[in-house]
Length: 299
Ligand SMILES: NC(=O)c1ccc[n+]([C@@H]2O[C@H](COP(=O)([O-])OP(=O)(O)OC[C@H]3O[C@@H](n4cnc5c(N)ncnc54)[C@H](OP(=O)(O)O)[C@@H]3O)[C@@H](O)[C@H]2O)c1
Image 1 (spheres, rainbow, N blue to C red):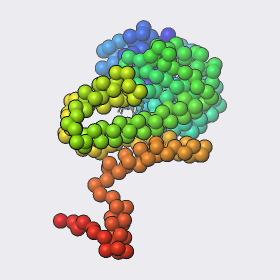
Image 2 (image 1 turned 90 degrees about the vertical axis):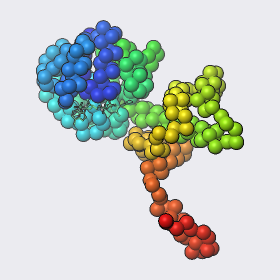
Image 3 (image 1 turned 180 degrees about the horizontal axis):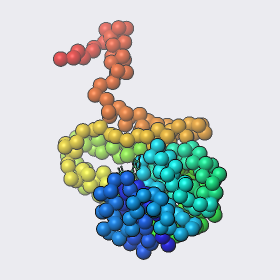
């Protein structure tokens, strides 16, 4: 099977290498040429343009897009559409808001083209050696593209979850769960770090990962980060990201799901980016007004 692939960033390049290893033929295009050259040197077939990429595929064409979410996806789809025909399939594997996927699928269906919205999990390691995919869209398109999903994922690591939008809905919820898990591990290790005992946190992460009920890949990664930099003294507590978590909260609250821990984890992430909070100052100043309670003056 020959597949088209657009977007050779950290995720895309690893997925392409994974597909090549599974003996699929892959035609690639990327906005910046250096990334494309790298993947071509490892066995992919390069295309000078999106039109050329489509010309190198036979019908029904299957083209996987793995670019930054939002406008880049719309831009790529608008360049792809004139070069695709009825029955062709676009796979969109980024972290996209599910309503955008539903809208794009509706637009593409007018041309007879399918869009499969694919939630891609497993990080760079998964992209290269076995990802976990949740796929939304029409059954007919899923069945045609299934050998690609089978090749790129871990054994048992892909699922057609439902109609258009559901693949990304599930993935965004997954990311919300990830936020809460990360926060829980962070707080647990902070308490161990501050305890009266002199604890080897990396060793504790390792032993917990061996049969405890809280074992997980995230725990393993937390332990290995602590092992590399005990006390994590080389970095600050600034936590980046947050878009998918915010979407997860929006979509959960739209259906009246409480989502309390995940929303709290998102809010705590925002706190890590503030040098000082205005809210804290308002609270301190107000307490001082009503009770003469202490405020700490700036030096
Ligand atoms: N990193 C992860 O662990 C992970 C896991 C699951 C899902 N995802 C999702 O997968 C998608 C790709 O992530 P990534 O980590 O691979 O990102 P990345 O390394 O930043 O790569 C972004 C890719 O998008 C392309 N791109 C960006 N804007 C473009 C535009 N306007 N027109 C054409 N191409 C454009 C870039 O092209 P250039 O090379 O020319 O810049 C590059 O190929 C995102 O939606 C991300 O949220 C990431």
